[in-house]
Length: 340
Image (cartoon, rainbow, N blue to C red; front, side, top):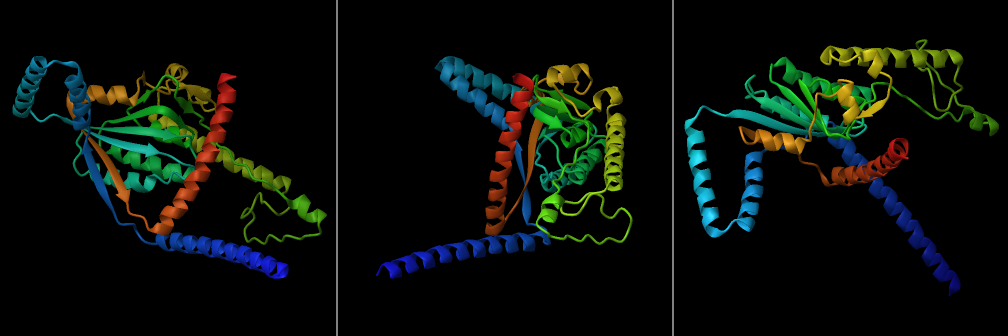
């Protein structure tokens, strides 16, 4: 009887492992299928003036007495009627970019930029609320190129940094006609970094051969499993330096007021210091700026939302959990660096 119970337990464990593997394979297959198809999505547009108006009216309702509230409403109705008679107010298109390592938000940003450029004129404004610590060069290069489209169209671009715009994030921020930074936001990190482990000696210790076959002298420079050479290291470093030089030139093109050799050291600065380095133009949060603009302009928040299948949502949720763990680890490192 004990044997049967043990055997049943073994079968249950085995079935659990098999089901878990099958579930993972299904998710991966779904994600793979989704990559080749343009996701169906839609552009969501919200008028932020209504949001600010709702906040104000809720507070007025709680604070003012009945007569004062009635008088306030009459004044507002009169002001709105007069505004309709006046010339068309400036439009402000508000975008958000919350960047991860892959700059995956560029898939929505490209559609949002395409949409607003069908209507925006040099008399309007685009405000980008940006948050990113950087990531892959090609991903952030594409994201930055989307913002260049706005500059090239002659539409004023204001970039607001409340928390961080570093490395690839600052590559995007520097395109703005103006950069507004919260006092303790992080800006800069104009540098390039690459790192990878190498387990060649471990494999050699256990008599495991790993062959790397290439056609082209520099098809592979540094590898994880193969034996790295000094020549490969030198070429890898040369590529990093080339990328860094391109990064510096890009920033210098759009932020001509900065001393590029002074700021392109890979360091980051808090907003207060970044202002003195000309990495930012003004100390102000996005909340303060948009609330001010809402008094004199019509604010439209654009967000392109793509519909995702169940396997995609499951896979993205798992990736998001992992990335949040990494972000918390990086945050602790930053706390140690700046506050301890």
